[in-house]
Each structure stands twice: as C-alpha cells, then as structure tokens.
Length: 435
Image (cartoon, rainbow, N blue to C red):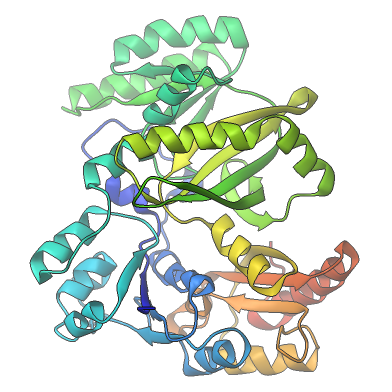
C-alpha cells in the first residue's frame, strides 16, 4: 500500500469562514489567541499513522518523541516545511508553507495526502504544485460544514431540535422574541462559526436586544452575509459523536462512537461510551439515522472522514444531529487508539503555566520512573501527545496545553493512572495546579 502523508490544519472553520460576514460578540476567553498552541496541535494526527507513514507538522517533532513512538506504536517519519520563525509566513496555513518549500514537492508526490480538514489553501497548493486532488470540491465542504446545512437536514429528515435559518437582522428580530416566548432559552449559532466560540445562549429579551444592536452596528460598518441558526436551548446531559467515513463510491462505514466531555461548548476530552449509554443510543435508532445523514451528504458530492455531534437531553432523549463536521476529529483519534490496542482509551488535555525548562526527554524518563508511561512492556498508561504544544523554548513561563491519551482496562486503573499523571503535570511540566 502507498504510504500516507498526514497534513493537518486545526481550527479549519476559521479558514472556511468569511471574516467580512456578520459575527457574534467576541468572548473574553478567546480574546488572546495562542498561535503556538493551535499550530502545534497538528502533532495529534500521529495517532492515525501506521508504519512508514509521514506526519507533516509546522514545528519539527523532537527526535526523542519520534523514537518513543517508533518503539512503542508505529515507525512514523516527520517532515516540517522550511520556514523562518521570525517571518510572517509562520502564521500562514501549513499548505501555504508547503507550497513555498521546494523540498516538499517530492515528498507530497511520494504518497497519498490525508487531510485532517479541507481548507482553501489545500486546493491552492494542489493547483500551484500540480498535485492530483481526489477530495470533494471546496464548495461542497463549505456547505456541509455550515450549521445551516445541518439544520436543513433536521427539517428534511424530521429530526428533533429543529432551528430557524436566519439571513438578516430583521429575521433575527422577528424570530428571537417568538422562540424565547416558546422555549424560554435559545441558542444562536454562527453558521460557519469556529468550534466552541460561534455559539451564544440567549435567555432574555434584553440579551436579544443587545445582540440586535451589535448586528445593526456591523450592518452600518458594511458587513454582509448574515448567516445564523436559532434553535431551542435544550438541557443536555451528555455529548457524544459518531465517527464515520464515506468512500469515493458513496458507501458509508460507521467507524465507532465516542462520549465527549466539554466545558460549556468547548471540547475537553473523548472517552468510550459506557454500556448503558451505548445501549440507550443503539435502541434509539441512532445508527440508522446516521446512515440517512451520510446518504444525504454523499448525494451532495462529499466523501471522506466525517463526524456527527449528538447529545442526550432530559428524560434520556437522544438528539441525533447537532452538527456535522466534514473532517477528522478528536474522537476519531481516540477511537483509533482504542482499536489499535484493543483497550479503553481517553484522550484529553490539561492546561497550566509551563516551567522554565522541561524537555521531552525529561518527561519520558520521569514517566518511566513513575511507571505511568505506556510502552510495549507496560501496555497501560499515558501516551504523551502533541509535545510541541508545551515543549518548545518559547513556551517557558507561558500557559500551555498538555495533550495525552490514557490506555486502560478498568475505570479504577484509569483513575489511578490519571491521578498520578495530573500530579506529575502540576509538579514537573507546569509550575502549579493544572486544570
């Protein structure tokens, strides 16, 4: 089989969204974007690679980390485009950086490119470099990625939690009052909003009026492209997702299911479904619903990886479609680890202030001593992920995100490993408590 070349652009929604269109008020939590952290997340895609595959990353992965991965999981090569860290191009898409690196052409021709997500710069790179592109059209990706499209499928397939597609400030003003009167609380979603920050709950007429004034101000500034979805705000008790892929011949393969932990609307971790949760979801007709959704997006011309976000609300009601993500996902990474090792896996992260100096070598050595590192000889424990989100020199004394997966058999094993790992992160990698 031809080797695969994994290329990842995280926060793909940010590159798909038209930034001249209307937007929700900025949330303070996201006011300072950590570019180093976001860009270094591309190392997470190593979970998908097999022997002799290549992982393309913006920052070169440490040799010690690649050695660990090779000895323990798969022999993966790493390639990083040649960039000047002080150059403005460092903030460009990974595909733009590859396009501008003469050494990348031979590499990209040597295998099959596998994308975490499809963004405009991928198509631009293929055109500029004369590379064969077997992906669906960008227009198709844009459509399926929109929350308006997900809502249209709820209406077409008669699924619960239907919303209203809004195309003007006037429509917002007319609809929000009616829905507040009917449901008490509603959720406003930017149709192409960035995950976790393109959503705003509305629980009063006063909040709705402030939002309307915010939109009117953007209208006066010449913004165009009002695209939002307003839907009832349900009391969710659990988030979960289905990972599937559609073949080029339009066959749907359901790869598996994941439970998702979130803080508000921001992702925290992926974990296996419990037995009772799985039985509830299966008995609700959920798999059959996924196949219907997949059939619809296949008709639109889409093929490749996809994830449907779903939830359970009060009285154990299953809401099968919250939104569609036409890309890989964190849940897919975790599912891959579960299948690879035939054990339970939990994938997540903690955040904290990085110590002055702490290297990957120190991390691996310390974890071995504490007997929490996953290895062939110790096949239960922690797999460090995306080391460049915290190990780079520029991360010292900065807030960092430490990604990991824990491989285990029982919940008691997980708790013991997690507690030791959390203590280690807060006392070694970071200067104090992590969360």
